[in-house]
Length: 174
Image (cartoon, rainbow, N blue to C red; front, side, top):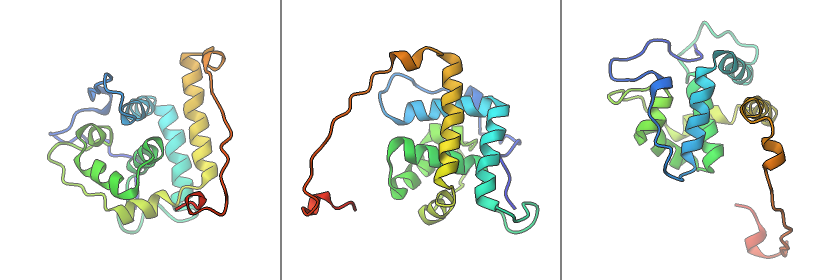
């Protein structure tokens, strides 16, 4: 039995829209958390994203019966942080259990002892299809274009071609 997210705040948690994020550090998790905070505050966008995730996770199964599963919001947050920060599942587990701001964006309080085992997290994130992740990405990019419609004209991307010997051990992905 899964749910999108918990509407019930705990006494030790702050509303996600009031979670204070320090925007000064240049760590790559900060913009990801800020984007997730915006998604959560925009209910229409959040519902669309969570329904996309629910479609992949549940498929044709019923959501009102069975054992409790990971909330869709937790799943989306962890998937976004993993992809946005290029983390391993072990690193993601450590952040999910110890990073106060990440837990605040997930709606978890300081005294909440919810654990996110790496295997469970991996198994749930792997249920998200690449097409779904692309759709979610497009929804978020669309929101960004509403804030800065001319941003696409200002973005500059450098590209280069890197030559590798396909027979060398360093060219084999791990």
